[in-house]
Image 1 (cartoon, rainbow, N blue to C red):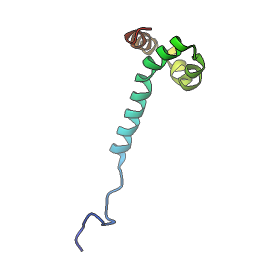
Image 2 (cartoon, one colour):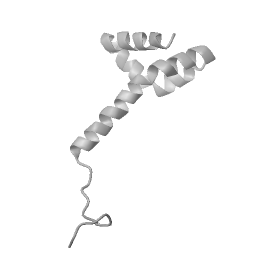
Image 3 (spheres, one colour):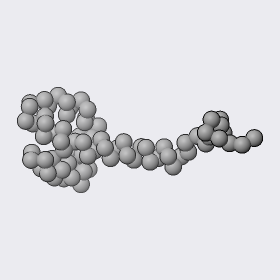
Length: 79
């Protein structure tokens, strides 16, 4: 039987695909902190930071390089 576009013999996503998805999601989460932080500062929505970024802020409190990065990244956006 010939495998065509309607074939059910497609490969399922493997470990490399899912590892890539995880890395991209984590990167987007961390990199979104800067713009969201600035938005929260300008419009007084600190609750967003406390809810959405609680895990990141907790990690930054024990990892000073991450803390320094987040402070620098926020400053890039004018905060």
